[in-house]
Length: 229
Image 1 (cartoon, one colour):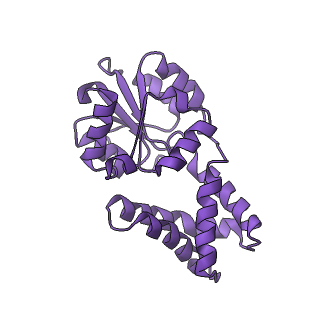
Image 2 (cartoon, helix red, strand yellow):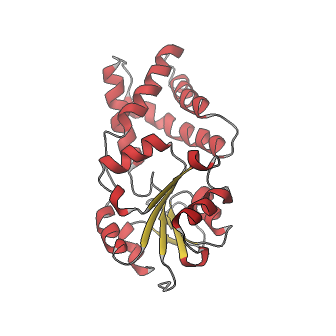
Image 3 (cartoon, helix red, strand yellow):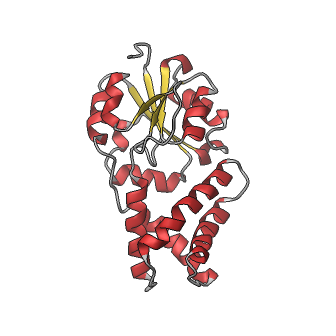
């Protein structure tokens, strides 16, 4: 059912519009080749993905620093596949990863179509836990930045989703009313529960349909947003 009171639509970026897994895999392939590192990419990613998610959870909860996140996720992944990599090389790979990540810009299916559709009737915004410089490059290089009137990132606010402060900051920046706003994101904890906790309407984007919550609107293709907006 459509919510006719909505004026402002807030999106997460990674895993929601910007296909993080695909772009990340291509980046690792590139930087392993650049640094002459002989690693089975699929084997590495199989271990890296869950490790990365664990460290991002710790980062969201303010339990580790950005530097610890970047180093430890790689170090742990190499240890998991029993490939010995010196700390200096891990630091270089970490820097190379951030440098080259935004050079790949695959978006989820129908991203441009849904942004064209929504931008005709709503103010569009981004709320992201990603790093400011990297997120700006991703949006700019993938040619979606012009759709968004405001972009709020965790570095601007000093806290990360699901902390209510970042949602309230984003609403104030957008001059939007919480009762007339909706959050669309892939992370149930950070995006959905975080937005719901301040009274914002939500839609969960889950391409794999892994999360089950009958109280939350859910889509697996961005065009399905037309059913609600």
